Length: 347
Ligand code: H2U
Ligand code: ZN
Image (cartoon, rainbow, N blue to C red; front, side, top):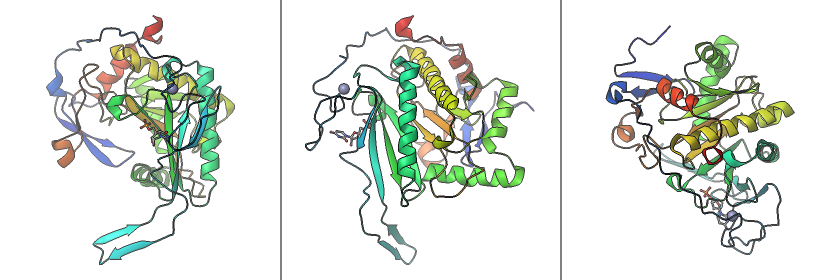
């Protein structure tokens, strides 16, 4: 079953959220310009005395970082969520509705080195980050008031990242946030109907077709989803349908580190820059339910469009009407797939 209207405006269904994306491929008939930036030699030092994440430095308040050698996690000094608040709520005639929300925010340093990013770290070092994510998911998720553990990374100033030191964040909270909540509904209804996971069956189809697959290893596949919204959006799907960070075998943890390295190298090689994105995991909720429907995956949402400086703006029609994209998912996948697997700084 092929799309016969790939040169015409059409809509594609995001099966994970149940929302439609408008695709307008006829607007980009122009060929890929391959526009790459001058290779700017990064001037960042291995250690920055002014960085609040570097080993031994002080942070907001009077907290001080240890001289960590691998990874390091701490409670966010400006946590958006707090664990110790009294439960309260209002509902004024279905018109003014609110309730308190408990949670914990953490910051995760990926490396003591100020000048590295995930694609430039060794797979073994990324594996240490994977192990930390697993530990944090287990520990935070085991608290009775934590029903979802959202692990993510904002990379690059364009994404509002405040510091180049390689780091990510975790927001763990009582409610299941909106995005995973939509995915829960979609995955549950598919599982009830078909008896298999939505992403497992989707992955099988994509592996048959190959046209949207970007890279893979024995345990994970990274592809541009059929319904991608961001120009170079990708989805990392586990081959085995498991639900949680804590379900991963040692080999799968290794595989996750490897696939993260693979896709982030390709991203950096797209414009020969440290490629900005927001990325994060969608594991099953930690609400004590079994979640046989849930299929572990990771999203990469990069904002860049045609060059290192041209950003896709999600405004106008997108704010008021519908998400929309020009280049097709297939086209983006082809570009990413063909990029070198060696980081441009090492080429
Ligand atoms: P970004 O990933 O968006 O750059 O955020 C970094 C986080 O680090 C941010 O949430 C926290 C901020 O609250 N932070 C500390 O916890 N301590 C500090 O001393 C500075 C920043
Ligand atoms: Zn630093």
